[in-house]
Length: 163
Image 1 (cartoon, rainbow, N blue to C red):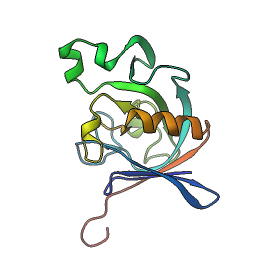
Image 2 (image 1 turned 135 degrees about the horizontal axis):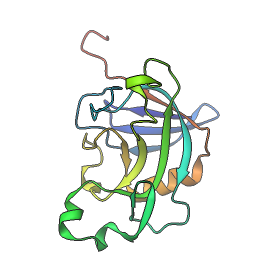
Image 3 (image 1 turned 45 degrees about the horizontal axis):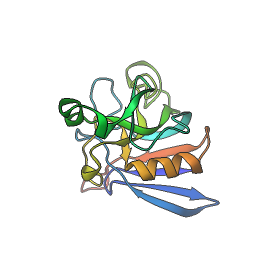
């Protein structure tokens, strides 16, 4: 089981009810949102439905979930300015109809992942376009720890009144 905390920018891996690993992460720079085109990180219960990138080099760049054959530091300067998807991809599928599954709130259709980034210096603060980003070493570590079918709960940010 994974628990993503947007407020703390932390992703915890639980095994048999205990935290086994904690990772610094980056969620969206936009407010949390389950709506398509919002670029916000969706909340609620999800499942890792696909793992992409087994055996690829650390820093490998993916486009359309396909490795392009070069790492981020081998890309041109303009491409390096973009927030690239690197090293591994854990594709997410929402499990809550009307919240993060189906219609305009479908996490899977929005291509929301857990993935590595070429902008590791931003890890720990909101900087993605909706995905949960980890350092390349951490996403490889997590990729090797979990299996397809692992659940992820992304906590909603509460306002000052606890709502």
